[in-house]
Image 1 (cartoon, rainbow, N blue to C red):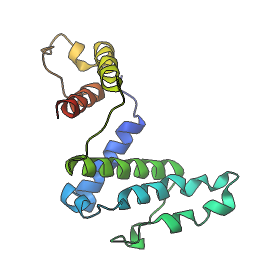
Image 2: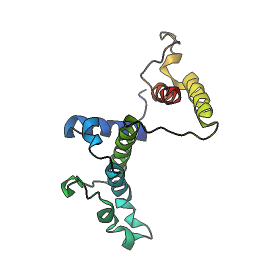
Image 3: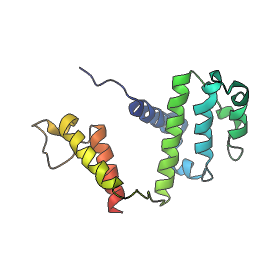
Image 4: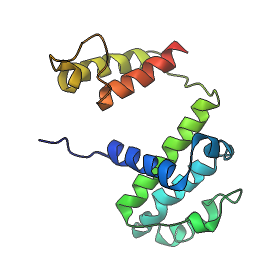
Length: 159
């Protein structure tokens, strides 16, 4: 049975589409070093929240938040609520990657890194392809979210 899609999968697929189809590479993203991607993500995240009690306030919120520098309004393309959240997530992921690539360090809370590593190792034992006896348990399979997250976290810890 195939693994069901999760928000992480959908966001990663959208980010891959942005890079492949739109040409939004790391080099391109580096041109937006003033929070523009985070602001655009916020717009996509709140555009459908207008059904709440804040309807009057949120009607034009995206217009106030949309980044004015280096961003054309032509890139504002809201779709359905779920797709908008996926776009928001992909833009946040791009902003995080840009910041990490620029050398910004994640400052974990005391014990946070150790707890995350323990959780990822426990998850790896339960769901990772590495538990498949055909894989060498000394290396990550590279095919599951747990391995990717563990590799990314251990890279951050090593830096």
